[in-house]
Image (cartoon, rainbow, N blue to C red; front, side, top):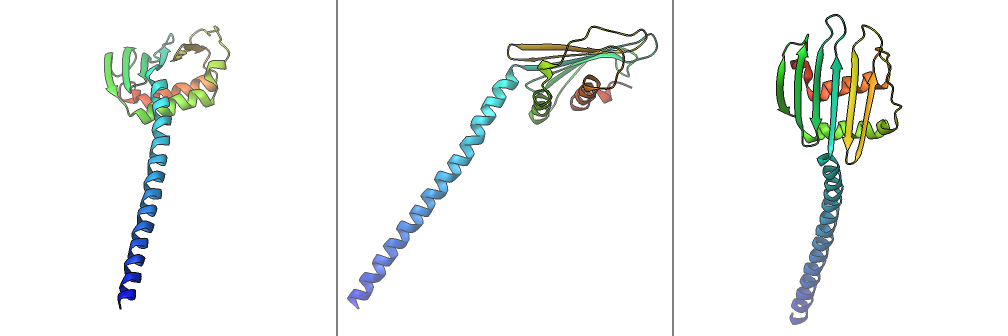
Length: 169
């Protein structure tokens, strides 16, 4: 019986070592998978710290909404209503950082900083200006003839993410 107990103890000791090894592998993998996204998030958050996008809709000769909205990397939104909007004046709110990331990603995916700059406006059409800043990069684009395309699509996305619907008609 003495040998049997000895084998049992050795088996128990090995079992503990196996569990400890499994735990070690588990924790190492957990730390690895948790730290990788944190480093990517930190890089993204650093980019967002220097991120801003401003949408200006300049009215037409009629009753076109005239306002501007700025979205900052920290989620701050600042709206200024000028004319033909439901709310005139300044309003501020905060949106989720995930929404700001979505907007920053869209600018990157659409290669916004390589878009051509236009300076043509048409009489009695609203102007849409978008100015984005990421770090030292800054870009301004204009759509002044209400032509469908990238600028108006991006403007609609900025309106949607910033929540201007509550202040504009």
